[in-house]
Length: 337
Length: 277
Image (tube, rainbow over all chains, first blue to last red):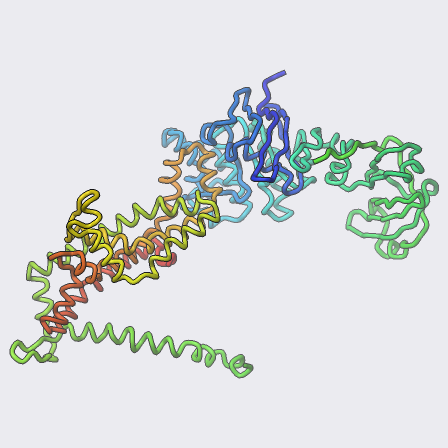
């Protein structure tokens, strides 16, 4: 196997009494689009900051391309960061911002100007070089920050919730663009986000963070279809958790099981229950069904034919739910934090 | 209240009439009187003010070497004090805003503000004692004695807080992520300071310099206390008001620092420093 771009071993970080990162072991392959997904306070940003060198780990090591960089300062590491607030230098023009890293590394004036313009081209901002960051929109600033990092051709690019401040439309557009840029330049992207849609759409692999630990690492499909813990099942997408006596009644076994709402259909036979809520959400409708077996299930149906008028009267109706056996995923317990 | 709500202009008048009156009468009025009386003269025999337009005072100031020397000396002191304050305030403000814990920061701000509560005179006299022959400084390292050097030291001491506070405020507004971004792009601390921190702080430094520069330019009490025989513009004004009993000439001299400050403010305005005040 090739040397991983990033190798984290036994990484821990405490801030006073708070353990932000509680032991992380992780390998990220060269050229991978890797996402760290988790709620705020789960330690994902702290891990990113330790890879960049802004925070020093309390214990454990960070290796980049096989070299231990745990004690190195940020300026001695071959990584670049796109910050959540973009962190553009307000007193410099856009092109000067992009050039900054090259200028610091003493690249000749002509070459650095050419490379900076090229980087601005690649994020579709040609012609904006003379502007001040303050004269640009959020989406444009985001791309300047990206160009400023990419122009240095780092082995690894770290992105700290870079799309967090953008509105939904722009976000979706930037998700596609980021993925495209990553494929073009072929460098490793480590992408921190709390948005599960974002992580699922963009990544080759996702690490789901829970209370300073990694609950699961895998491809988006693995993480979504086979959540390892109830936390992952609940955080990545919506999940119907079946436990206790209900589990025995519905599956015939003891344990904790998860069924995704879109895997369930309302049919003529199956587990009986009562519709307690009908939520119309544009392309789909969500039904909340209280099964007689003693568990509440969320069911999502595509609105192919259904109209709102027809839906209104469904609350209180008796229905039956079915699902395929292979869509019932047995999951382990949450790891103690 | 609904009356004022329906008459926004009257509301504005009620709000601003007192400060406007103060500004026009007390502030601009005094300045105008100063400017007008600068063109008057004093009868050499009777000592009475002659209220006729004359350029005599200004001619004296421009032609006589002693006035030019005092003006240049005052300018030099103001510049030296400002430079010293900048050099001392920068590292102090950086420590306060970016290094110290929030708790320590709180106490440091208090420590910098409390000397401003103490009387100016007491602080100046404290330095007189410090600098005296056979005083504490003399026994430790030797004293420079009273004179121009002492004036610069004491004025720097007095006005330092006015430089620290705007720089500290400027640094507080500077996001840490900018410093991290600079390091991330390969810059060591020195480079980050020169390339990012300093340029962003220029308006704050100029804002502080407006205080240190103008306060030094107009000071005459410190000069009297620790200046020995040194004379600055303020001392000439004071001497002409008192001993020489020549108010018009005092007014004419007083227009010199006013003029210098106007030039200075115009120059500084371009840097955006006035928005920092």
